Each structure stands twice: as C-alpha cells, then as structure tokens.
Length: 194
Image (cartoon, rainbow, N blue to C red; front, side, top):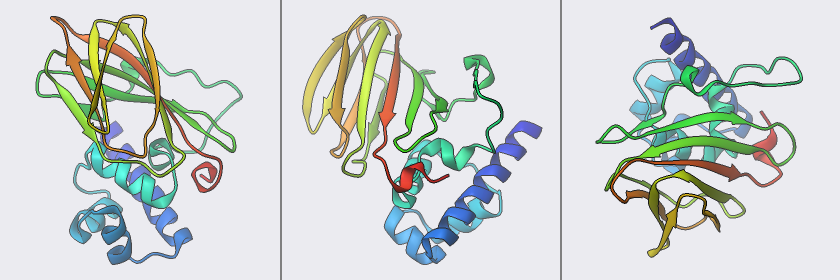
C-alpha cells in the first residue's frame, strides 16, 4: 500500500511540474490529452488510479515518456530492475500484464516494457506523436500485431518494428500465453526533458 501511495505522489508531482513547464491549464491539458478535468485534478492530488491509456495520453501530450511521469530521480550509473518488483500498468481480462521496466536516459530515450498476453486478450493503443517507433520481440508463444488495421502474426523468435503514429493493437494468439519485450523509441526533444 505504501508503494502505491508513493507512486501516486510521484505521478502527481511529475504531471503538475510538466504541465507547469508546458504552461498549460488543467482544462488545456485535459482537452489535448482527452482526459477529463476531474481525472486530472484527482491525479494531481495523488488520488484515484490512472490507467495505462491515461498515462500514455498525458505523456504524449506533455512530450514525455510514461516513465518520466512515474519515476523519481535516478540514482547511480547502472539501473537494474527486477520484473517482480514492477507493478503492471495494464492487466488484461485474462490476466495478461504490461510492465514498464525502465526508460533509458539521453536525448532520445527508449522505454523497455515486458508484456504477457493470453489468447484473444488485446491492448489497443491510440496513435503516438510522429517520430515514436515501437519494436516488439516475441520470446514465447504467439501474438497478432495490428498496425493501422493490417494484421501481422508474430511467433516466438520474431521481432517487428513500426512507426507508432497510427492506431495499433497487441493481441494474444495461439493456445498459450505470449511473452514479449516491447520498446518505445522516443524522438529526441521534449521527451528527453525529465
């Protein structure tokens, strides 16, 4: 419970600071990110439970990585993250999960995610800003990658990459769980400012 409270406080602080840096009111950010003003007020007060889609829309609108909204200051030269210590940001209807493991530092950050999708379980994503590229590497099982309406089956050992500025969906396929590593390559610029 203490970890959840600390995480909400960190997100609240980071969203407020990013909104202030961008010179946006709550109404302006809400309109641009397609998030209600009430949800933003609650988020900035460290209340509620924002879902992954909300965090992605806010990060995209503010020109940040999702992890920039969630992380405190970095410590040390080497960052090691154990998947068991990272709470899922998305949980599917059949128990699938998406965990944001870390984001690299630098002018063009990369988010590293671990996903598990069960058969027929899917996560649809809205288009990201131009310049964002996603890469998916399937380590076990099978999935269907849908990019701008076109389906691309991926089995264990396959890797795909695509410009993520169009609607895209990750869907479990096959008879068992699909494990994958997804990276989000953010363009140099505002997303690097955390």
